[in-house]
Image 1 (cartoon, helix red, strand yellow):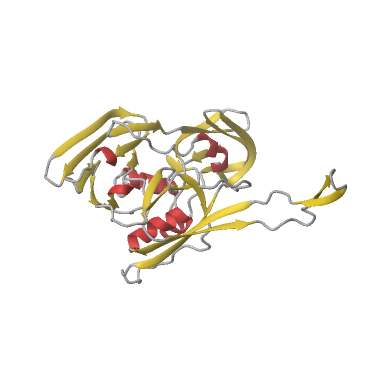
Image 2 (cartoon, helix red, strand yellow; image 1 turned 135 degrees about the vertical axis):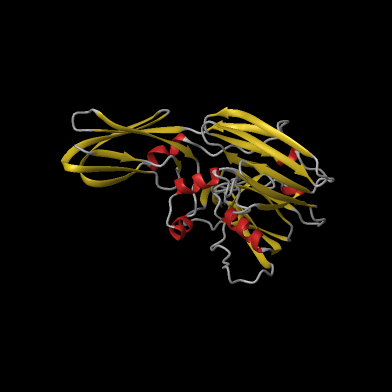
Length: 353
């Protein structure tokens, strides 16, 4: 009786995590078990031929996005050990036929990218481990990263099980420094750019695994309007973006509901007087972020799609109705960007400022 099981070695839980079972003999009842931390799932299937089971939804609570980075003193820091799911196939008698493990990461790759490359998120994670795009950032898919000083945040990368984390930094003066961590399980690391960069080192060459990444640090523009947007990207880590354009604030007062006024009895006049119910105020801001390069537009689209955005420390919802389109045939001229945000907190009281 030939029963087989295949699973990805790595997976983003925001994308499908598929366990593939195959039976080349007569149909039979089989059991699929999934375990990771406190998660324990078991189900039975009548298997005849090939069957694909997406277990991503089961595993999404096993891994979370990381918290916002805080100031620290470690240049290279272990953020966490990546959780591992165990997936087991049993035959109709309950005997174990095969057991596979899958290392889990939060977030997901764009479904359009997976379709375009005809691949899976697990395959892209493996390519990341091989160094094709080592850092989990929406700023680039290649080996060049540009950010201004106000945008400095840790850069995150993962290691495979049994792999050392070794980072060699070369600054603009040619000075080298190496940071390393011993081999261990698959882990998420943070390389804290805030501790590496000062005015004298506006360029860094980062050697990681088998690839080299070039990081250019520009001076923060001197403008009267500066806002920092901190947002969770699709890889489950936070990035910062400087927005330097003008902002237009609007406070919208909610319409009174039908029958929203209530009556109050005035004992002095013996009259009933109408009294308003509290009305909600929604604060919004539209930022005219100025002209942005093609590379900036990719980062802005990541911000627009983020599920958690902070604007100058306050949580906001991005109300953009479409992504900023661009194609390979577009010119590389900067494009003007307008970003509408709505503050997450609804006001029912007003305090003068």
